[in-house]
Length: 437
Image (tube, rainbow, N blue to C red):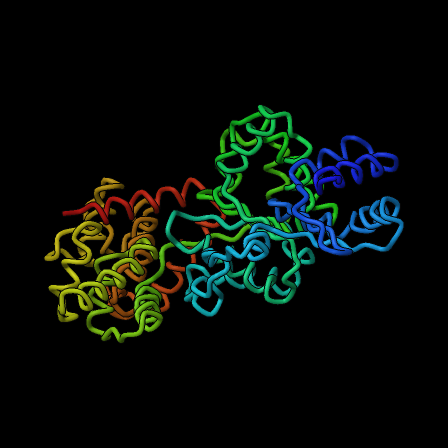
């Protein structure tokens, strides 16, 4: 009596009459026969991507081979890992990945001036993938919500069509996959995995810069997806023009669609993020406590959310009241000492130190180029890092009015978008301010 493995071997032999050996190896090398149940052949393929392609493209050929062998119509059941466990009576609950959870959606993403463009572009991509902003390139420092937006895009598209082939990975994963494909001689599998996706989301694409062969492979992957009108979304800690070792061909392609930057959230947005996260965790955070945390943590959304989680843990496990002492305890490993607050005076002092100017020069009506530039940056950072109003900010600089402050903030933001070196200067000053003791 022939075993089910023998039957599967006979099917592959018949399929070789119409398919090349490369095709057989690419799609069926890790597919195994599980059982023959009446008129159904049960197969298992652990690779979800291959399994869906076999289901869509090769099932008629397998069924034709079965009919040829058994002289009657037969069906095929193709199982993934979960299906195999259920078939064998060993069903296990598969953990839900972060991308599949409801934690990282557009509904839970707090929008503010620092991320509005990136969020709007991500929504447009999710609603009509491949049609607008392809590729979408989102850049900014770590912990500002770039990965959240990738997950949110995937969440919308998967809800609309669960069969969409979504590929999410980090830049270093692409490198490791490519190296392993070369080592194992499975370049075909590698290219199939990446080039037949409907949506490719790549976090931290900056890691491919400087890797010559990896960049070449990503270049061809990008072209294949782009020409097929498949959506590509990339994130990075910097814009393409600042990646010194990035291949010019890739730099050009990364800039084809839309580049959207994200900055550290302004005070109002930080408070909204804190209150929103607390609501998700099932408790309320008072305005006073939210404002206190937001004054302590100024540059990282991930730290803001982590602080809320710690506060809840202290409350639930230790019975701690949600007050400033509990906040100080929660942020002591990620923030400055609890008696230090960022003030306009601190910001002005650090800017003067950076540009080697006297404070009187910034605060005075002086129109010298250096003083004017430093003053505009000071107004921008005071608005972003403190709760001072426009009018009160203007009063710090020889009684200037709120429109002057608004114009200064707008000019700094526009210059940052156009001039990477200027943007790096702002980041350096923020780092100095956040490091002040």
